[in-house]
Image 1 (cartoon, one colour):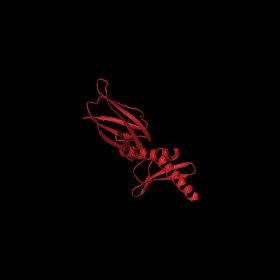
Image 2 (cartoon, rainbow, N blue to C red):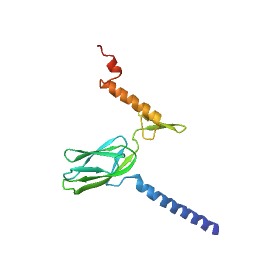
Image 3 (cartoon, rainbow, N blue to C red):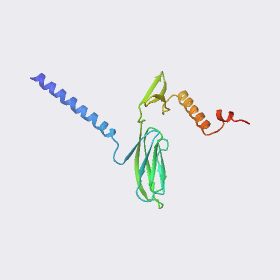
Image 4 (cartoon, helix red, strand yellow):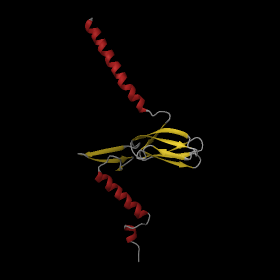
Length: 167
């Protein structure tokens, strides 16, 4: 009888501990209604009330907010984490003060570790390089250099495309 009571007590303690530990995690799983959730390297359109004249972003390394005509803003995820933005009217009155939560990529991301070196690949439907915050410097810089060279060549700038033009 005493052993059974002890077992019940232990089970109740375990369940209470699990509930206490799970409750903060459940609160973090979904952003609050006044929080704008956006993925890193993606943008989201948000309509603001009133006549917004100025936007202030708490940490522009996490998110960028651009005011568009008609009270629309574009929120772009720049880095992981949370920040806020404040929208003011011409008189300096606060119209909106909202949180922005920037989360990880939404695509199927595969991360490869080679010791301390990290590489990221987007695998939709085939795996291709995807530069992501936290990748090793060599991988990140090589991928960005290739992207810059490709962009320059495509726009007719100096590079391989310019060398092929006749004199």
